[in-house]
Image (spheres, rainbow, N blue to C red):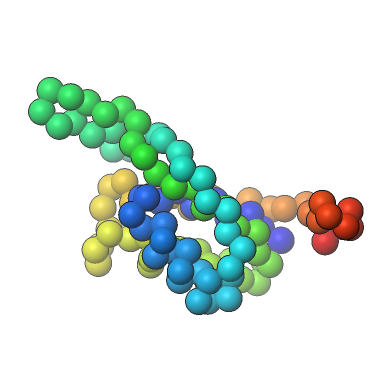
Length: 107
């Protein structure tokens, strides 16, 4: 299993979540977060916004679904045909074990 963490623009997260749902991946956790990437914030006039709002989407998938899920997220979260700085980042890490809290069973 793999843990996918995708940091996306807040206006893109409903599209990403809808596309994941339609692709058969309905289980997604969404958190509102603030941060900055390579663009180092945003300057408007004399005001600099060091931290920008983003959404963090978290999903656990089977290894075999990685390429499909990553491509779905990238396509849905990208701004325009070529994308823009600040569109986000996807992190993929292995999951060693999972447990269902209600049953106490290892999944």
